[in-house]
Each structure stands twice: as structure tokens, then as C-alpha cells.
Image (cartoon, rainbow, N blue to C red; front, side, top):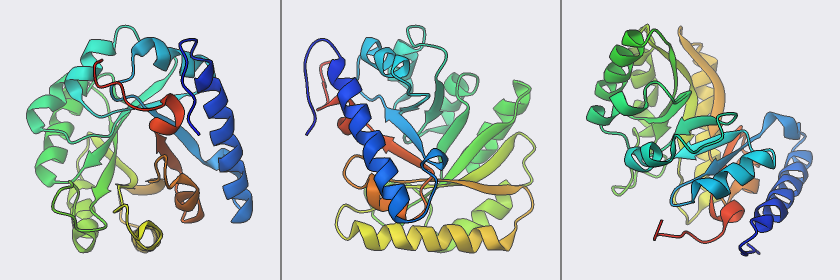
Length: 235
């Protein structure tokens, strides 16, 4: 159960529980728990609370919205790495190209080309994940599973980008089935050894399904409510 109080101590309690659950899930499938990173999803969470989580050992933050990130950026503890995980319009890439260490939500060649252009202009190589719409849901972004390998092959030659793997948000119903399909897709693409594509990261699993995602090979679990409690949409 998520705990809430004004001292932020609930974040420490929740983080201990999450780490315990990850260790248990990893042990059940013969994985090293250290191979799984916890991402704190910070949408609508006050930066002071986020910084408390960083102080408690969270080293990776996930930002969904460009404008919200820009309003918090100068307050954040700079020791944490930040990934962009939300829907990203090409005209917003310029605002996050410098501070982000990875963009997880790339689902088109057009977006990849803009990231590439700006990364080169900033003299950096941007790590990205290709977002896959594993459930083929009209309400979600992401490339169709059967089009993923082709998109990666077209992105791979871009000099300002390095593909590091895949990301997905599976449908809430039959989640274990879709997590399994994502694992299969990840491994199939990895076996293709596409030049310029490093299949190191599989970002999937949130508060309600991260244990199941670990069973299916997730290397990054994205947890918001389970760490920070119910969303404060008044932020």
C-alpha cells in the first residue's frame, strides 16, 4: 500500500518495498537484481519530493512532459540521470536535447531525424529507445511491432543517435501476454544484430506490473504512484 505524509518518509518506505519486490522477482527468474534499474516517474510530483527520492538512492528520473520538466529542471538534484518517456513532438526536441541522457519514446523516423540533427548541433550522441505499441492501441503512441525492426534499420545510420533498445506500455488487460510478446520481439531484434543498434535496454513495467515485467526481461521499471503516491494534479 502506498503511504502518504508530509515528511516524505513514505518515499523511503515505498522504495524499500519496491527494492524488495524487485529482488524477489529477479530471484524467481534467475536474474541479478542489479541488472534492473528503478526509474522514478515524476509527472506532477513536486521537485522537493523528487530530490528526496534521489537522496534515498534513486538515480534515474523519467519525465513525461517537456513544459513540466523545464519548470523543475533548475531545482532538481543534478546527480540523477533524466530520461524523457512521454509523447514528444519534433518542435519540442530542442528544449530537452541537452539535459536528457536518453529519449525513450521514439516512434518515427521523422522524430529520430530531428533528434539526430539537434544532437549533432550540440556535439553529442543521444541514446534512444524505440517505443513499441505492443497492444496496437489507438490511444497510445509507438510503432507497430511488425514495423519495429524496419524503423530501427532506418534510424541506425544516423550519427547523432544510438539505439539502445525498446520501450513499451502494454495494455492493462492481459498484461502478462503482451509483456511476453514484447520480450519475444526484443530477443528477435537482438538476434538480428542490426549494425548501429545495441539491444541493451528493455524499458517496461510500471507500478502495477513491474514484477511481471522483470520476469520478461525488463531492465528499466518505470514507477510513479508506487513510489510517490497518488498524483497531485494541482502541481
